[in-house]
Length: 209
Image 1 (cartoon, rainbow, N blue to C red):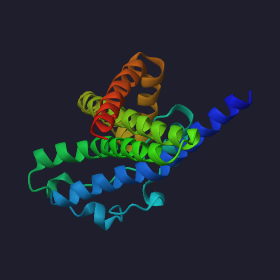
Image 2 (cartoon, helix red, strand yellow):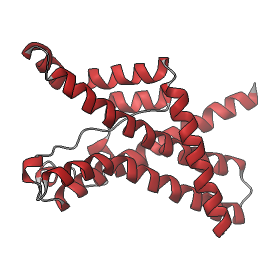
Image 3 (tube, rainbow, N blue to C red):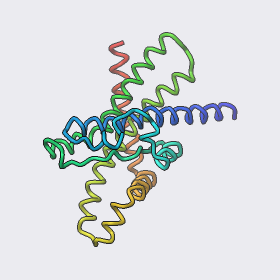
Image 4 (cartoon, helix red, strand yellow):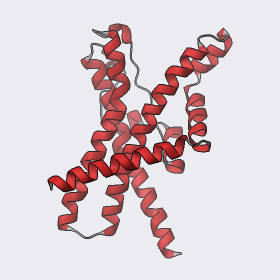
């Protein structure tokens, strides 16, 4: 019983750690890419910052704690300002998942370094689980991008009332997507892909180190 309580505590700490470190990086990465592509809208809205309270979304954080998948606040962007809108949109969409993968790789490196100086199971667990969560978020976000494109295509062929409800309630779409992931085999696919990527990163780091 005591060990189960410790595990739950470590999981909660790891998720909170990811919320306050990873989600702000995701938002900053999106804002930075948008600005580099020619659109200063994120800068005008104050999103070009690592301040977690600028990027954290309450519902996204709750979902992160409960199911391990979550999101931050959207970064305001006007793709019409991109120097190359087609390339800019692709880079902007990839900013969050790529930054999440880079963070995961960084945490694995940090875990490797810490393992040399400490044998703390708690620290090792939190760092490694944080890396795995970041990879899971990256895979989830890539799935989200694909499903969003599909949903937007479908909604554009529906009535104006449905279009308004869809675009005016992004949280509702997030929750529907999360439900689809949670109750279908998609969650198993995401977990499997995440584990394989984690093993790849882990092997690379430990082979080099």
